Structures are given as C-alpha cells and as structure tokens.
Length: 145
Image (cartoon, rainbow, N blue to C red; front, side, top):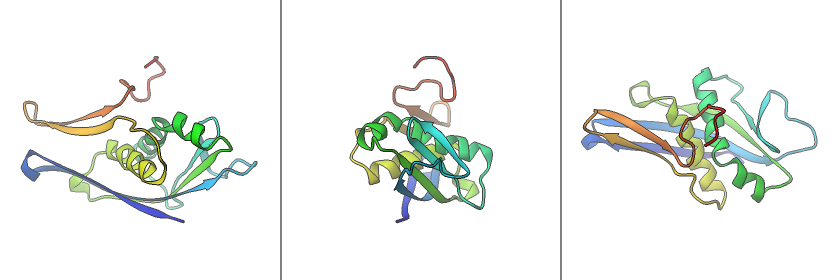
C-alpha cells in the first residue's frame, strides 16, 4: 500500500526551507527483477514514478535508499522493491538532496531501523543549507567511506 511521507525543514527563522512529499510502497521482491527498476544493494531495488523524474531527483532517491540498504537487506533478506509513485515539491523550497532525506524518512517510517544519520541544517555564517549523510562523506563517490 502506498504511503506518503512529508519531509519538511525550516531554518533561519523560517526564511529557508525544504518541502517534499514522497509517495512510495515497499513490496516483497519476486524472483524476477522488476521492470524499469534499479538495483541499490544486493536484493534492494528501486522503482521510479511512471511519470518520470529529473535525473538528480532519481539519483538522490537512490542515495536515500543506499544509506539504509545494508539495514534493509538485513531486515528483509528475501529482498524488497521500493516502488515510488510520486515526488512532489514546490520549486521555491526544494533542492534535489531533499529527495534523499524524504526517502530516508519514508524508510524509517516503514521499517524499524537505526538512524542513517542523514540530516540537514542551516549554516547561518555561510547562509546555506548543509547536508550530512551519516557515515558517507562523499555521496556518489566510489572512495571508501
């Protein structure tokens, strides 16, 4: 069943923010690879919305699963297919990294797992958002953590 997760962040007294609504469902992984899906880790797969996504949104959704994938794999050794049906956001309150935070939040709503450490803060001295990803220092790098 599709569940909605609403990620919200406000910083700088509400002057800076992020807002994302993610609709997704987790279904057992069959023996057949789901069509039009991407493997995240072992038997953890991601399906993107049929309506399509910007490549950065797709990459960050995948990253949001990847930082939780070892825990998901341990929790569901037979495998899981995370089927996303939509990722909605107002352009004024969005950065593509927020897709990863929305997926991280959705996964933690659905499954009993330890925190991945994914977070966002507002760095007032630099007037910008700062993202942290737990043990992962450089997302999308093949370098060791």
